[in-house]
Amino acid sequence: MTVRKNISSVVLWSVISAAFVGPGTVTTAASAGATFQLDLLWAVSFSTVACIVLQEVSARLAIVSGLPMGQALTRAYGDRKGRWLNYLLGGPVVLGCAAYEAGNILGGVSGIQVVAPVDMRWLTILFTAAVAVVLWTDKRESIGWLMTALVGLMGIAFAYLAVARPFGVAEYARAATVPSMPAGSELLILGLIGTTIVPYNVFLGYGVSKGQTVPLMRIGLTLSVVIGGAITAAILVAGTTVPPFTSFTILSEELRTAMGPLGATALGVGLFAAGFSSSLTSPYAASIIASSVFSWDKRKQRMVWAVVLLSGFLFGISGVRPIPVILVVQALNGMVLPLLTAFLILLINDRSLIPAGYRPSVLYNAVLLVIFGVVLLMGIYSIDASLASWFDIPRTQYVVKVIISALVTACLGYVLLRRKTSV
Image 1: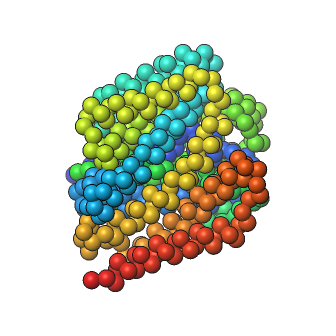
Image 2: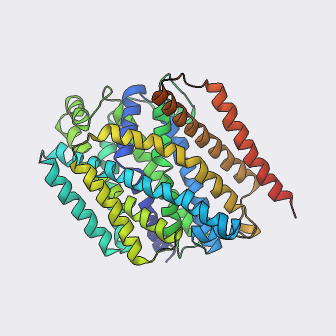
Image 3: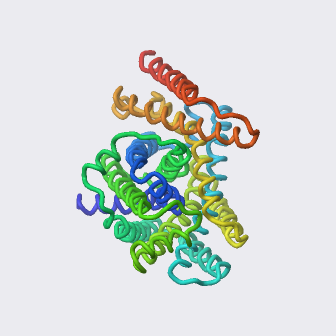
């Protein structure tokens, strides 16, 4: 019975790895490998660990408090502030789901085209219709098994692309654990972190944890995210085979040249699985936000996922090239993360919500603060790069960004310390 429960938990939590291993992951990780070889593999390791920690906090908050996210914010900060926080945190993430959905559909359709060149408009219609049918069933267990199958398909496809690379164990170990920031790598590092620690996954985890125990949740969550992180790493390693690229078509041709027809086919299969699974989870996450944050009923939840799916569909048939869209969405995602991470840390330490036995230890809080600091630094990078581009001004020096991130993180740590020592 215990083994069966563990397997069921892994299947349930596979929705998380299926959500973050989407076309954005394929694009960003393959670009990182193509441009910087293994130098950014450490960002995948950090992102995987950070994702497990933040998802565990989110799920623990849901299980122990027994409250939807919106009600937890209201209890912690009062009706008026809680209502504004609901819109501040939930609103942008729902919009982000819509932005991701466009990239998910475009990426999934591109995967089919790699294997079988078919008219993109018809593929987009059929692809979107298939996603809508699965979402309409609203069967959580069936969706979980489908996600597990798609994650497995992605794993096989991208492992095939990565296994032939001539790197040794020592090279992988060094690249996975020693941080390196080559010149011009900032946006890709932000993208690798942003594509793994996805804001809507926090709410998705909040929703799927319903009815689970904390130990069971931790098993399913950890295994699922580790598998997703391994797939991301495999994509990055596979990307080292080719030079920098600007489209999936070019990437498939480069892989065909380097590895033969099976290389291009593996990319197509993996990209389709990534796109379809993420096309399901993005609207699904938006509907969970509508439920857990805004307390909307079933009818309104369906309206939310339908709007998210429709926005992705309309974007897909517009003919916009997928690569630039996906990369921009990954970067924008980095700006939402710090705020959401900060409130997760504050809520899981709130005495009115979480009993003493379930609140984080000092060491766990230290890990959370490190994650917050890094996420904040990446967000500052994103904002600074956008402002410099829009207004044609010089970028802020790196040391200034680090100082700002450290000061804000210290302030959050001080707030936690006050809560720990107050009566």
